[in-house]
Image 1 (spheres, rainbow, N blue to C red):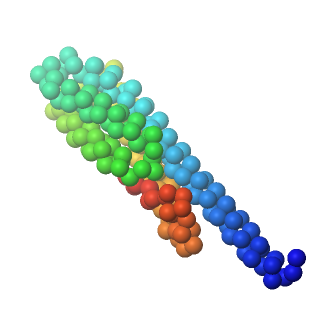
Image 2 (cartoon, one colour; image 1 turned 90 degrees about the vertical axis):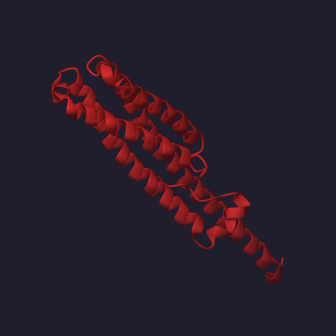
Image 3 (cartoon, one colour; image 1 turned 180 degrees about the vertical axis):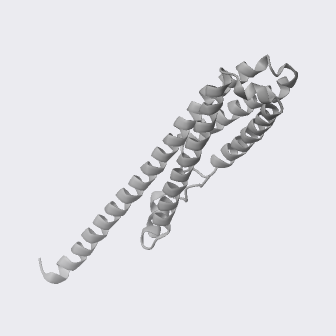
Length: 181
C-alpha cells in the first residue's frame, strides 16, 4: 500500500476514533445528568414522605383550614407525577415545564400552610410537629442543592454539544440541549 492510499484510510480512522470519543464524552455527560436528576428525585421522595405526616398531624388543629391542607396533598401528588415523567428522560426539554409548574404549585401551597402555622404560633412548638417541620425544611434545602447539581450537569452537557466540532454530531446522534430547572 502506497502513502497516497494510506492517507485516506488514516483520515477515516482518525475521524472514526474522534466520533467514538466524542460520543462517549456526551454519553458520560448525559449519564451525569441522569444521576443529578436521581439526587433530586431522592430528595423529592424524602419530602413526599414528610408531607403527608405533617398534613395528617395538622388536620385536627387546623380543622377550619382543610382546603389549604388538601391543596398541599394535591400539589404533592401532581409533583410526583411530573417528577416521574422527568425521571424517564431528564434530557428531554418537554418534560421539565410541567414539573416546574407542579413545583411552583407545591411551593405556593406550602407557603400558605406555613403562613397558617405562623398564625397559630403554638403549633410550631408541638413536639410531634417539630421533627416533621425540620424534615420538611431539610428536604427543601437538599432539593435546592440537588437542583444546583442538576443545572451544573445540564450546563456541562449543553456546553459539550454546542462546542465545535462536537456540535456536528448533534444531528447524527439525535442530541438536543438538556433543560435547566
